[in-house]
Length: 107
Length: 118
Image (tube, rainbow over all chains, first blue to last red; front, side):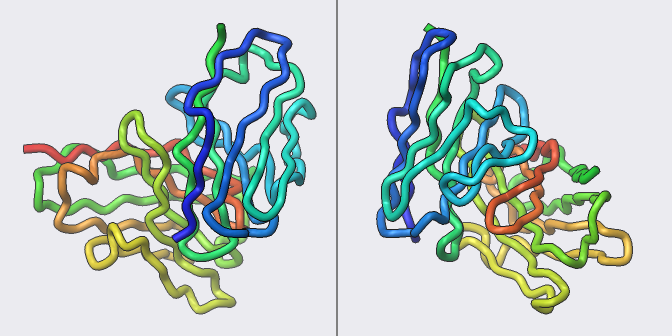
């Protein structure tokens, strides 16, 4: 199975700051990585698909990059509503796997 | 509007069984793979399995952690996805989500909580 390692486990930011989340795959997966946001007591919400493709309805401050084994989700200017857990998921090979997540908190 | 609504969760004793349902609307159900994902309290998401679409014969795949105990099925006439869970263990306690699959999991339900405890 492909292991996805997300770092750091916790990110502390102030509103307006730029923040980046890392997801590293245990083997090359091309661009088959997807990013989700999960607010407290909420369901996961797809933010970015295939490493960098935007999703309708998702604010433009969210962007993704990377290929192969190293991927990044960025939030250009954090807002209070962005406080949540963020997960990456790979669909390059079965079984699909999720990372352990990064918690975004306010300073 | 795409909607996924899970139901059927609750408290069950170890060794017991439970069937979860996921009622869907707003899309052509038979065109899509459908999946179940769970999340223990305070922990990460775990993919459990999926059932393929009509074009791929509605076949199934499972994670190693639930293979042989859990069964995914679908009622295509009513656009409902099911998860039959047998021989439940304490570590199966989690919120269970259904999701529509196209590579990414584009749509999710609100989840249903399963608690396995004596």
